[in-house]
Structure formats: structure tokens, C-alpha cells
Length: 276
Image 1: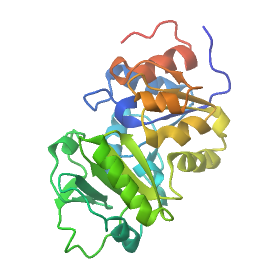
Image 2 (image 1 turned 180 degrees about the horizontal axis):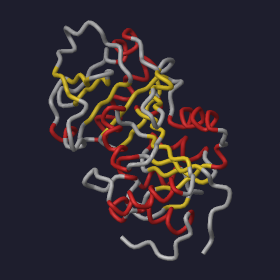
Image 3 (image 1 turned 120 degrees about the vertical axis):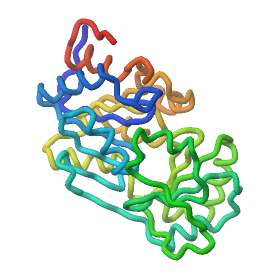
Image 4 (image 1 turned 90 degrees about the vertical axis):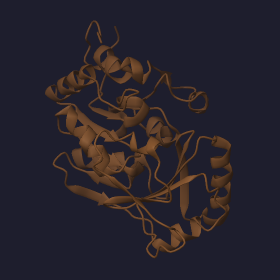
């Protein structure tokens, strides 16, 4: 059994990665992360979720975790101290939304305490076991303050989101970059915001390099993170296009199979057998 050498940091996405298909952290995963902590590994969770939402999930691990949220627009310490924050200015968001948007597309602005949306989407609410981060129904035609952490769109038809992405970038390519966290979820952030940039900030603070980190992800908002760490691992349940985008990276078990915890157990903690 080959143990990864020189790895001192474990970085993981949440949805489709650390979380199982029911959006929960399994008891097995929790036990493995507690052992990581006991062996003095630095743990970083990097997610597209808002920090209020993600903090409630990360707390169930019951170990100290640095939290990178909103794809890098927020960084919180294990003590929940805000270390970094970046918001999109109101006029930038307003310009981005100044395109023809299919009324069936759910539009969300991530604010500090609530998410403002044009339609209540029960599927999005299902991602939260407890509603720590509340939706607020708004009319974008009358909204005055468009300032936001990020812009989020959701629709079952991926091609509709691709067309919307192209329209927004034609207007705002100098200010924004995008990522599909899922084929049904399109997100826009400031050009300076990325999970990999935020992770680098955390590692510099703690005195580690990206080479000493292993990362796990399943979405296109994970590409830079997976490519920049010493070892990047793609979930078996990730889209085929992500695997094709990073063909040199290893594909591991799915999130339904506790892929992250199983890999950590066998390759980092050097356990002989990872049993679910």
C-alpha cells in the first residue's frame, strides 16, 4: 500500500464530495476526519455554499476546520472568525442581470444574511438540513441594492444556463468569471475570487505550501483547486467532462461510497481496510 508522502493538508469540497447524496456527512467520514485532526493534519473545506449554510454542516465533523465559502469570496477560521471577504458591487451585479433571463430560471443573490431570489425553489432548500441561510423572495425590477457575494442561477436544462452564461459574459467578461458547480447550477464571482486563491491564503497563514495539500472535488468550480494542489482527486460521481478536463488526475470512489474518507483512510492514514 502506497502512502502519500509530504501531505499535511486535506482540502475538500462539500456537495457531491464530502457529503453523501442525502447532503449529509456520514459517521464513517466523520470518524476519518477526527483521526486526521488527531494526527495534526490541517483541514480545509472549500465550497460554493454560503458560510452560514456551510458552517452548520462543517460543525458536524466536530474538528477544527478552515472554511472557504462562496467559491472563495469568504474565508473563516476554525473559530468562525472572518479572515477574508469580497463582495460584488451593486452596479456589477445589475449589469450582469441586464440580459434576457428565462423566467423559469431561478436567480439568487448571495447576501450576508439571506439569499434573495426571484422564485422559491424547494430543490435548493433541500440542500440545507436546517434552514440556517434563509431565502427572501424579491422582485429584481424594484430591487435597489444588488451588492452580493455571488450570483447563482439554477435550471434543469443545462443548455439554457450555457446560453445565459454566454449572454452575461458578453456584457460583463471584464468583471466576472463563472463556474458550473453542477450542470444545473451556474455561478458568477468576481474575477479575483477562486477556491484555489482562497486556499493559498489559508496555507500561507498556516505555513504550508500547495504541494503539501491533497484536494477532493466534483465540480467545475473545483478545477483550479484540483490542479494547483500537490495531489488532486476527482470524485467518481463527477461529470465526465470534468474528468476529461483534468485527465491526469486520479478518479476515486463516489460520494455515495464515502470516496473521500476511503481514500484518506488507505492513502493518508495508511489504514489497511476502509470499512463503511
